[in-house]
Image (tube, rainbow, N blue to C red; front, side):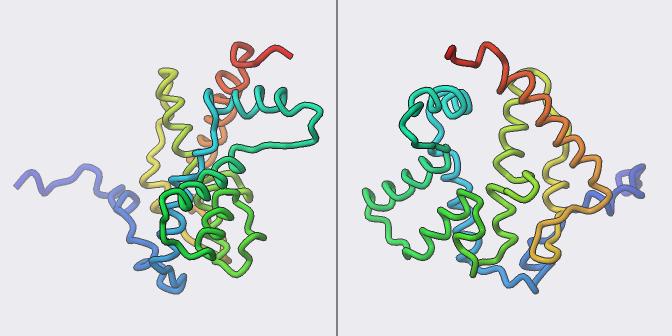
Length: 201
C-alpha cells in the first residue's frame, strides 16, 4: 500500500514521457521516410571527422589546405562517405532520399526546400545549435573529462514541440537551454580549444 504513495506527485506530470510526435502532433504528418532519413543523417553526420575529431577539422585541415583555395568541413566528408557507402554496397535508396539525407547532414534547408523544415533542427541545427549531434558529444565529452553535465536529455527532448515549422522548447526548459550553452562554452574553453590540442603553425 505504501508504494502507491508518492512524495513527488506534484512533479510527476512534468516528467511523464511525452508521446511520439506522430501521436502528440499528428498535424506534422511525419512519415516513415522522414524518420528513416533523419535517422540515417544522424548516423552519418560525423562519418567525415578525421582522427582527433575537431583538432583534425580545426587545425590539421586548414594547414593541409593552405594556399589551395579549398575548404573542408567534416560534413563534406560525411556526405562523400554516404555516397561511397551507398554506391559500394549497392544500397537501394532513392536519389531524392539520398539528397535529403545529405541536406540534413549539412543542416542546409535550402538544399531541400520542399521537405519539412523542422526536420533540419534535429541533426545539424543551423538555426540555434541545439541538435542531437551536440547533445551527444556534450554528454560524452563532459563525462570523459570527469565533469559530466547533469541534464535530463530525455525529458528535454521529449518536451520539445514543433511550432511554426521549428522545434521549440517550453519555457520550463529555459534552464536546460542555459545549461547547454554553459556546457558548450566550458567544453570549447577547456578541451576543444586547449593549447595542447592545437597544431603548431
